[in-house]
Amino acid sequence: MQNMKLRIKFAKSGAMRFIGHLDVMRYFQKAIRRAGIDVAYSEGFSPHQIMSFAAPLGVGLESRGEYFDLEVHSYTSSEEMKERLNQVMVPGMEILSVTLLDEHTKNAMASVAAAAYSVRFRDGYEPKFDWVSQSALFYAKPSIPVTKKTKKSEVQLDLKPSIYSMEVREGEDGRPVLYLLVDASSSGNIKPALVMETFLKENGEDFSDLSLLITREDTFTNAGTEKQPRLVPLEEVGKSF
Image 1 (cartoon, rainbow, N blue to C red):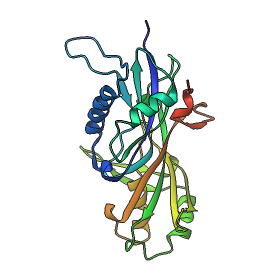
Image 2 (image 1 turned 180 degrees about the vertical axis):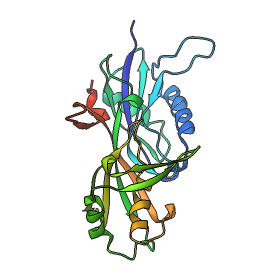
Image 3 (image 1 turned 90 degrees about the vertical axis):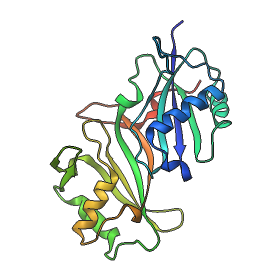
């Protein structure tokens, strides 16, 4: 019997935001066993659960839109699977949806095209300049040159084509929140911290990771074409069952 592939969306918050990607993978491997999911294993000397995570989340960031694909031998229903997994989750981890994928769907990692983030300034760390109005001027620039550091070297690049949108909205507490939609593909993969560092430095402000509260709001795939992209959340590629 052919395995079936599920796409699982989850949120990561609180203390769990400090757990790195490899530990998140190990955590879900154990949680899936505890939940009694009929998971499929690879063959060979050291069999492992067949799963594929989408773009890894940076340590310290919260998210409402993380994904991984899981191959199973059998399944019940989307709601029942979600409930069983949530029963074994720890505080800070929540399963948001479970959908069934077509057998020809690309895995989560290969599907990622973009990611949306909300950025807030911590109390006492707000910039001294009018960042709300300046953010619009920053995004309107025809080019945003920056030096991106890699493990081996430094690369000069233009951020502008990789920032798909940048706008300020009113948050639930009435304070302004900056929303970014950026390239998250394997060839681009722009980090929101790099955008914020460039933005702040251009306005004469020092950058510190401690000043920001960054949340990944969702992760997207391109359901259109390269010339006419149509970004949709990864969960919308699958269907409820």
